[in-house]
Every structure is written in structure tokens, then in C-alpha cells.
Image (cartoon, rainbow, N blue to C red; front, top):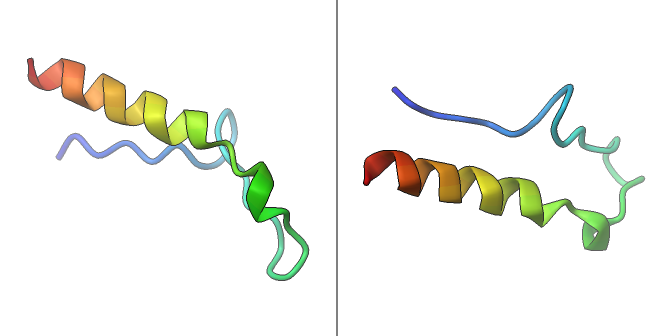
Length: 42
């Protein structure tokens, strides 16, 4: 289906509930994945 989830090894590994820092979310991983998906459609 062409779905890419940037989680896990080599990507974002979420913290345990209540122990994370939402401000430290690696948004660049999501934005990079969206850019690659958009480029693939072109």
C-alpha cells in the first residue's frame, strides 16, 4: 500500500506513557517521510 511508518529501530522509538518529552518529538522524521511520499507520487 506504500505506507511508511518511521517508528522503531532507525526511526522514532516512543517513550513509556507518562515518561516522555512531547517537545522532543523528532518531527523531522515525519516530515521527511511525507516529503519522500510526495516525491514518489510525482
